[in-house]
Every structure is written in structure tokens, then in C-alpha cells.
Image 1 (cartoon, rainbow, N blue to C red):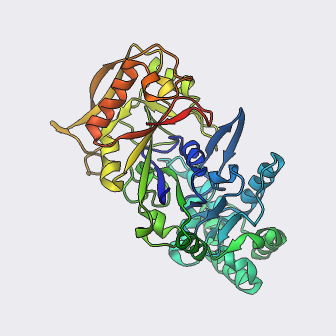
Image 2: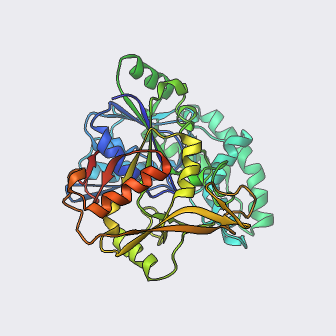
Image 3: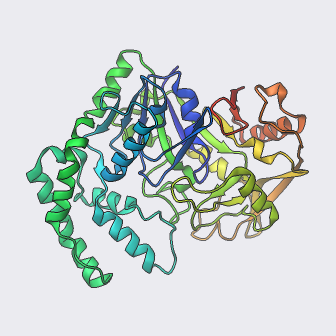
Length: 424
């Protein structure tokens, strides 16, 4: 296998964890390159459900090296809770096979506090998870962040916490009506768990480059989806990092030339969590059908996801940004039982038919989907193991998507379990 990047093609929740899990058996290393514990990758193996928030999905395969890259923001407490939970399920999550870049920024209590305070007071809510992801990235950009490597130098760590809280305590007390946080308490609490975290720290960039030089194959795993990218998504209803494929090199500390394949994970319909424009959203019984059949509730938050028809305009934008070499089409089985299925093939905006999203500030809000209607199918897909075993109308649906996008669906998923995905 060559080196590859895997990203979500829509607004997240496309089933990246499952595809990463499938392909991990063919690679030697899995690297998570952006996002934080606001993402939830759900993988079901032999009926056991694993929900991963920041640990790379490759951890479910014995012997695979997993790395949390510098582009990730890491909540130390959440990380330890996650590895404890995975360990209780019999998985090896030791520092011998799980590494954290020295450069990974840490989410601290004041990040979570300010995140919750902002969202609570906001008139137009973004829909954040309140886990401190955005404020941590803000500190990174403002050059007042705390990095994982700082855990090895208590004097540097203390000074950084004190500096960060000088400004944040003013916000807490004067703007949000909250008590100030004590820098010493934050420092003491972090140092109390540092002995468990420090063994995981490593020069991640060197480990990845050494693996590549030795002929080993590497998978770069993203979180969220391209339409949540901080630059290219539906701003401001986006995440706080770059989700596009090319951020894999930046968020891992390696050059882009290392990556040969770009796999876009596409759900067979569209969902999103939180606020923001969603032209194909369904507010009727059909939307509820997709939510119920697809189990569309957030793996991290439990929030019900908004559901709608597959939006090819959004996917064309993803292709323009990422140039995927192939797609993995997930949750095709959810569409079984529908008499007809709609595909959004264009938008109508200000009297024009557009194949790409309008770039004006409220363009997506004012876009109306233009649909093409295809016949549905009644057959249960859960036992399908290859292309020929799919119902004729299901194959027609997939082929029409490929025809309109110009990218082949190289992987088809017809159920939640590890063995319910096949190559095409």
C-alpha cells in the first residue's frame, strides 16, 4: 500500500473511522493530523462498539503504530479517560505503539470554560461541543499555547499557564461573570497527570519519516469533514482547523510529496450537526426516516443530526479542494426501502443554475437545490459482499454519482460492522 490521506467529504460523520479501520490492516502506521476530541469515530468489530475521540482508529489493530500529530489539540484528561476505556476492552494502548507529538497543543480547563461561556451568551450559536477546541487553536495562533512537550519542563509550563490566564481571567470576571481561574491550581492539576502523559511524547515527524524511508506505509487520518474546514467550509459554522487533504502534511510534520492517495469518505446522503446552512435538509418524515435508519446521533455529543439528500454541489467543492483519487461510499444500506431517491445536482441561486456553491456571504443560505430523481430499491443490502450482489437500482444510484462527480467509488459500505465494506 502507498501512503494515503482519509478525509470526510461533507460535514463530518461520514464513517471515516470504519474506513480507516478497514484499511489499517494494510498499513504500518496511522497518524491523526487535526481536530480534537470533538470528533467521534465509531467502529464496530464483531458486534463490539468502539468510539474513538482522539486516539487514531488504527489502535484497534494489534501491532500498528499510532501517532497523534502536531495539528491535533489534545485534552489530557479526556485522552487518559479514552485510553483507560480502551484498555478495559483489552486493547494495547501503551506508549510503545501510541505516540503524541511534542508539538501537539493541550486543551486546558480555561479553554473549556471560555468555549462554554461564549456559546452560552451567543445570540447566533455556532453549535460547538464546548470542549475547548476553538479556544485552544486560538492560543496556538496567538502564540500563548501550551504544547505537550512543555510537560517535561515545569518552569516553562507554569509561566505559560500564568501568561495565558492574565488575559482570560479578565474575560471570565468582567465579560462572562465567572470566577477567575487560579494558575497554580491549573498547573498542579496538570503536573499530577503529567507522569502518565510524558511517556507517550515523541518526535512524531521523525518517526513518520523514518517509517516511510524504511518502506512502510502510512495512513493520515482526518476528523470532521471538508465543509467544516476553517477556511473553505460554511464559515462561521465550521471547526477550528483545516480539514482538507493537504493539511495532512502540515498537521503531521512531513512533506506533501509523501502522500500518494487521497480517499474521500462520502455518506450516501447528507447530515450535519449544529448550526449552519444545509440546502438539502429535510424537515419531513423523510428526514426522520434517514435519522432513524442511519442512527444519526452524534458519537461525541449524542445530538440528533440534521439529515437530507446527497448534495453533489458540496461534493464538487470538496473535489476542487482535495482532488480525491477515490471515494468510499458509506451507509448505502440506509436508503433501502425508498421508492425514489433524490440527488441534488445543482443549486438555483439568484436566477442562475450553479454546479458549485456560491461564494457570497449568504450564498448557501439562499440556494435552492435542483434535484434529479432516481428509482429506489427494497432489498436489504447488509449481506452484499461485492458489486454484482447489489440491487440494480442501487448500482444505478452509485454510477450516477460517479458520473456526475468524475470520481470512482472504490469502496462501498452496506452496514456498520467491519466486514460490511467491500472494494470495487
